[in-house]
Image: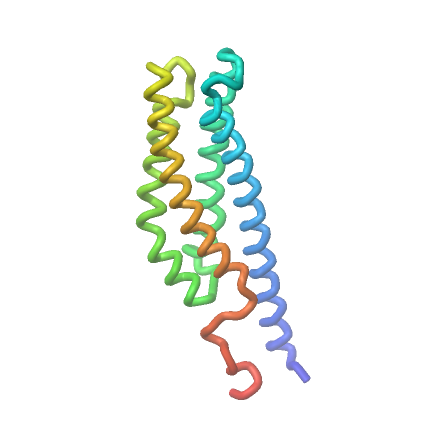
Length: 166
């Protein structure tokens, strides 16, 4: 029979995991929207009328910043504020964080350069910058997916075999 403290601890763990899963879902939803807009921009060479490009670019920049903020303020903040108790996840996040921050700088620079159509000096430069950004986003997504996979796991390696036999 579980005592009241153990029951409370199990409930808190379940609540934290549910919160983690909600944060992950929000991040993936925002990421998906951003990637759809990225694809529209990258494919815009001849498939879209020229006058739709400014609106797509502006919406992309806003969604790109929303995605970046979602990852930082939800997933990483969740870990930084010690809401995440699994050591494996904290170590993984710490190892990725410097690279994530470097990519975040690239994202912010892109936004600063293109958040308004009036800032676009040439289609060729936009395409080149989109290509660089796309490579950076692919790397960021790969790192985030590793962290998401760890966050989604149901059992911490730190607690193996200690619950019943201790």
